[in-house]
Image (cartoon, rainbow, N blue to C red; front, side, top):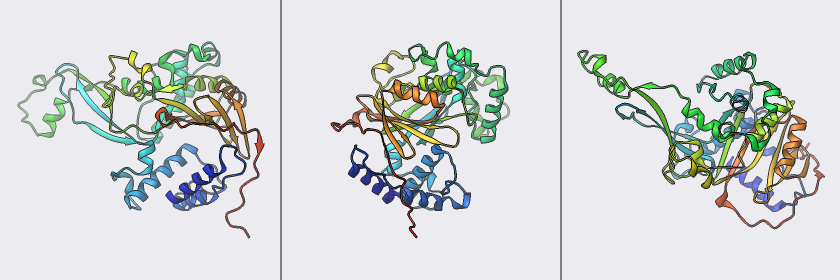
Length: 373
């Protein structure tokens, strides 16, 4: 997988920014299909989720690095593999009692792709910030929640969204970064961590419940370690289609710039905390690079060829064309009802000079078959 991706990017670099020819990715696609043939995922000629495909590629790169065919996802890579060096970040969840300040043992996890839910974004755009989706590992639980949201009276009405869809009117709580941050704030209160300590150590029954701290505790999330070069955020939709108003509301929620400290309580790099929200905008270090979109069993993408100038190109199968600034890109996506399913942000410190002009509209002939007869 690693060598195939290296070859793919070498061809892109060799082709330059004029995009004068198609970059053949069929060999990579066929390899991904072979790897997941047992699960019938990502098969050639079949439709599958673009976000899950990205995660599958990143997981495969990690497994190749640690040298394991099975169970490699749980192994730590040191030095980091390509996937973790570019996309990975480590977060720590710790429960703190608000009465006695007792802390739980930290729970450390590493993520490659973050997730946000369109129902949360639409609810926030309407002014209902609280009904955030329960964060459960069970896919069935998520599906049940999304179906309930669609059928409930709290479902977002187009007329309600249309009153605040202008990007300048979006409140901070209704932005993508605000939604991700709210997932931590909305976690239910827990009992004091001292209860867990006595339970794990088999304390005597003589210690009555009233002798333990009765305070409630909240979860705090921090980021530690190196920051990723790219932030990948998947947007999960409850259905395969959406109205223009819903697409518009979600696109308007996508921050132009994001700081990691907007997503967490704090960081070991900057020391920004929840009590200093005014620092967040000053220290935004990630810039919106592009979005992957879906509608009617079809994927497109809109990416910035010149991020500092904000100029975008649209990739739609064999057609690649310049479409102007972000507002122009949004108009096209809204009109076609293309639902953003993945948004990528890049570290602004990775800037390099760009002097080539944007490509004009052209249709690229389909890639030749990797198995010519």
